[in-house]
Length: 420
Image (cartoon, rainbow, N blue to C red):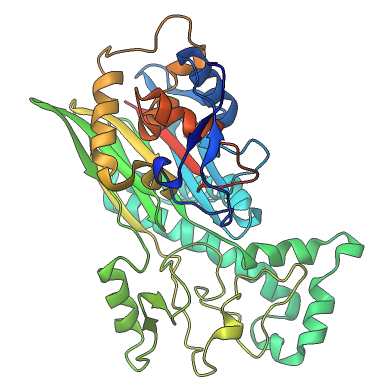
């Protein structure tokens, strides 16, 4: 590390600032030597690698990055192998938590289990259907919706279903839910409905069949080799107020509600249009006058208190994913799953130039980290993170890695790279 602190201004640092708002810019940082950059990246992003298909050479590299060492990220990723009657399916996913980490932890752990159960049931009843790409698209969609419905059902069952809520006033609901003194089982179930999570899940099986299911604003990108370099195909759309098609879908589903979308937000309050575990998405919604209340008062019905009383015609947010299928050929090199923090880091240039530069380096024996750098520099997700932070510009990368700020100050970034 070079001696002496340097100063960075807010406009010098990539990513969207999430706090602190009152940071006394400019802030000091340290310019790192090359070997120290890789060491700090490894420390902060905790890279992991897994071989998913030793015969075919398929590997998954992953990172989960927040430059504040003391902050726990609300992003998660999953890398799994699912054995279905002797056939190996790979399953990878990126999940971005909303407001807290209870739901995103639950999704990253349990959603792969639900997908496996759906695949096993399909094989047991009619194994030939697992050779139909359209059926697999539908299966992934149904498994994700079933996972979301189960979260709501676990809480509604406490009260005897949605109709049973009419038998309880707010004080009784609070007393029943806040059972921490009795072990907190009802409280834990309720937290899953109060927070939320995006879900971006990919699955593949030989020969080179790939499916990607998406809820939210994470991004899946397919990188292929072409005659003049690398092409990047985005496989997902953002499910938020910036997507005109999503806003039109909500208006179409609520034709008699002119205020269902205000200022590109659902009911003027909510930005996401698709995600897991929200009281505004469930087919059995939690509606006023019985908002679920617990301590702390952070709720996935957090907008309910500010919504117009007439607005109760849920669902507004759906847990129905968009699913795409690709049959890959020899040109396919890499699949990249990223949370929205990666998009933020790429800034105005967009993610495609970053992905193309990175692909040119890592595919086919391109420029590798210099000798003496930590072994973790071989991790493709870690190298992609560095490219987004500034690539060869040590100053740009060092500013993010060593900026003197307490607590989380830019959005978390999860990356999973699948190499075919």
